[in-house]
Length: 311
Image 1 (tube, rainbow, N blue to C red):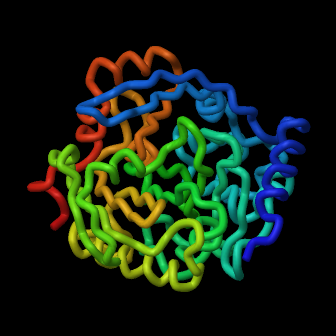
Image 2: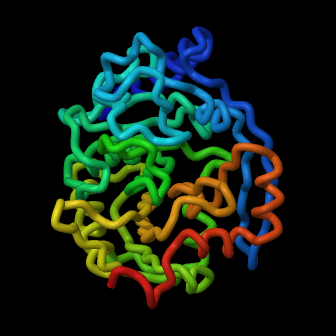
């Protein structure tokens, strides 16, 4: 169990904001409805700052690329790796033997965590049991949403393998609204499709995940469901061992997997959290573009049509 883990997260957050190592959460939001589904569109000032920040000269030793290259969020530098030697001011501590919990430097919500592998692995290499063990430890004790951005086209800004977690809070992404539209099933491994996502290749799979679940059993359940999702959606490694881009969300007994065709809708970067009902924009004008198109159409534009999916 992660005794006092969230106390450490809160303390580290307060310290990092006070020193300027962590961007404070400054956000405005609009609440939308689309075919009865609630969506939140948030303008988060930190995301615009993320685009503007450049790698400092004294951090060049952490990268094989040249000093001054732009940090992920703008043009991506594939050689820069902030997770290999994470910033001590943002480091919460170990999660099991293979991961370390790090405060996301440009968070979309308070206590937004990155659970990064200690050793490098490609972000698009298949997830392994150790990745789900890290997620299960946090989900089992604190709930919230675990998620994964598989590749740049799915919203990932780093090649170094990592999963992420956000707490349950008003306005934060969640699977609750979508799950209410699914048939009531309890057996693990049940595979379902949501009628309002009929234009998007996806699948929901019942898993043992969330508060009170035994972490080891939960991790095994998630790994099994992940293998099912890859089979259903045709997500297979290529000759280099890398998967096509996709998003994964896990919360409250469900896993949602969504293959991706592209990252952006009219300049708005969309990651896994968009499929959890919260879309993040970098300036207020982008809110209007999402409102005009409708959130479900926005999601369809970056997903894959069922007939064109990898399967």
